Image 1 (cartoon, rainbow, N blue to C red):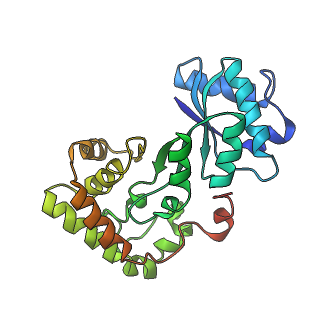
Image 2 (tube, one colour; image 1 turned 90 degrees about the vertical axis):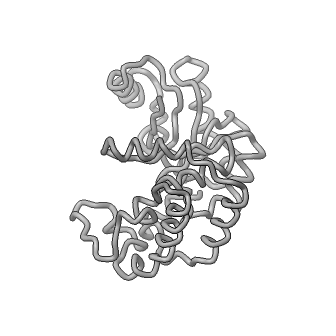
Image 3 (cartoon, rainbow, N blue to C red; image 1 turned 30 degrees about the vertical axis):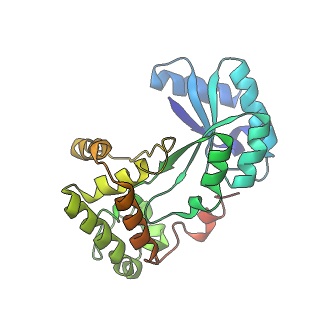
Length: 248
């Protein structure tokens, strides 16, 4: 069972005791999850107001107390990962990674491999766009987060259609779905990379799990990566205010 905590909620007041805010949130989460320990406790985003060493030290105490088993980070930069790891070994990093967002390959993934840390890519299907489920003329609900994301503007969706077409082409050649190609590519990267596609639909869950049976040869992986790297994805993945919260 994994649980994400906002450190600004706990760290600023050092409120990690059982009678405090953390204890109350922890007990409520365990009750919902029907378990008695948090297997993997993520810091949801790096809080610049709380030294990462303090965060790692607090989680180390929780691990020693038997309340948490493992420590995770989310959207942290390579240097932050190293600093945290010196205090308490980091088990996993959760960050966005997919065929149309490959920035982690530059610094983060080499750091994780060096330190023996697992990688849990969220949004491995790019919030649906690279799989073709979002079209140029798709109208989002007013509450949909995509309304705030620059890459999902109508103009950028039109410009990024080349990525959709590329994945669809490879999917057709393998007689599988675009989503399965996108996930199979991730699964072919490293054995310690485990994507977490989200869905509320059973048929999508079955489609996603089917990706584990899609075997891409090294040549197919190389061809897909080479073709994808030639496509310049348009639009930032977060609005400016949220972008400031990642990679710190």
